[in-house]
Amino acid sequence: MKRIVIFASGSGSNAENLIKFFQNSDSASVIQVLTNNPRAKVLERAKRLGVSAFSFNKIAFTETNDVLSLLKSNKPDLIVLAGFLWKFPEPILDHFPDKVINVHPALLPKFGGKGMYGMHVHKAVVENNETETGITIHYVNEHYDEGAIIFQAKCEVLETDTAEDVAKKIHELEMEHFPKVVAKLLGTEALEVSKKKN
Image (spheres, rainbow, N blue to C red):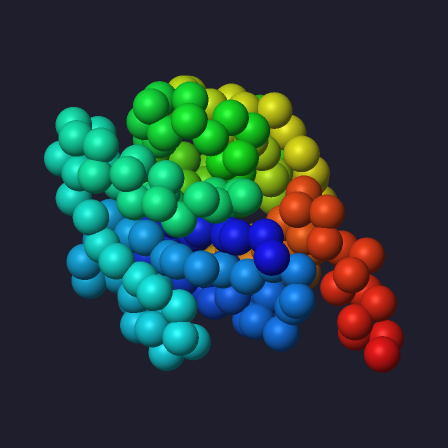
């Protein structure tokens, strides 16, 4: 059974989608959700779905090995950032090479970097008169949004679209593609498909 740990900072809709996608799988499951925000709605979502969930502070993440030790004990096959806003520390990345991925709500390298998340990205897309945007799933390295790209999906941006309209389109792309890409990276996609057919 492949093990997934999710990091999130906010409401956790992507985290919930991933948990539910793998809930009845014999090949992978989300074993834990971690957040840097003790008031994040993702904690409620995870607990409601029977997944262990904890919050941690900056010291535990960047100055001590508390979070790294927790991850080592969990032995995740993949660490998934789903709306997680802090930069990932190098000791964790060094210990889990090519095992940390993120979803970004734009077509990187456009609209990436520090402070570019959520509505900040969608507003920038609209203000820049982009005709398309999308999601980028990428490996995480020591720089914001600069890791190798794994997958991109696009959607049209209409002249009449507001940042809120763009956010809805991006949310739909995330819901559709993110779990499938995670399954593919874990090598469980064939099993998932055959199970759903049976």
